[in-house]
Length: 229
Image (cartoon, rainbow, N blue to C red; front, side):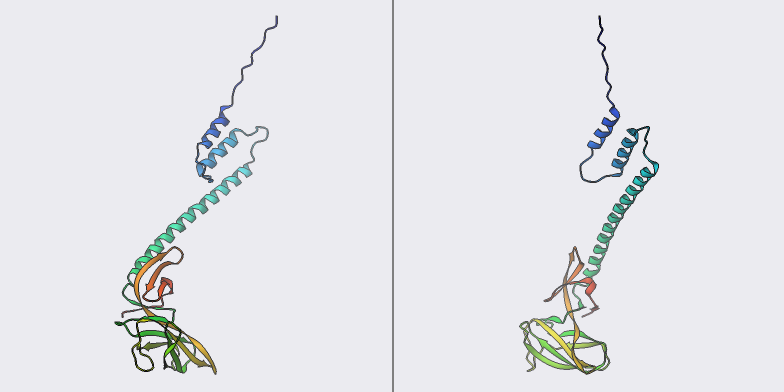
């Protein structure tokens, strides 16, 4: 009489355990250091004894992961540094509220209490007579006068807020333009003006921004000078 044999089967729990451990990780499309070593351990435990994992390949994988992990940590540090620098800029800019700063713009705002405009003309060559013109918001010239530019470089300029007839101009935004003859050629010159800082804000791209009354926001890094009044 034939006796049927019963074969007992065993299940390799090592791979299942490693798989379950990996499955418990949150699927966030990123590989942590713990995930990497868990996968590496599973790879070593299930390798073919007749064809083991090459040592150089394993070292290369570990070195690659360490490099990526180091870059990620460096990016985090840079992000933290940018946050600190932005906060420092905001603190520095807050001290400018209520003061006047020189900004790279020929436009300026006058009011009943502050009817004059001060600025700086930049020229690389001495110019005996620099022709100045002041335009209102519509582009109409309301005042013309000359400035001595014989010293060259940065030349201070001031407009008293009056038109050519001596009338006080209404509050608003006006633009100062300069023109001079350099090497026999007439050319427009760069004009910067002082503006009143009314507030400070933060911009995710440019950092601290100083808001100039009647002009708008100007990056703190673009401020050329600070005046007491």
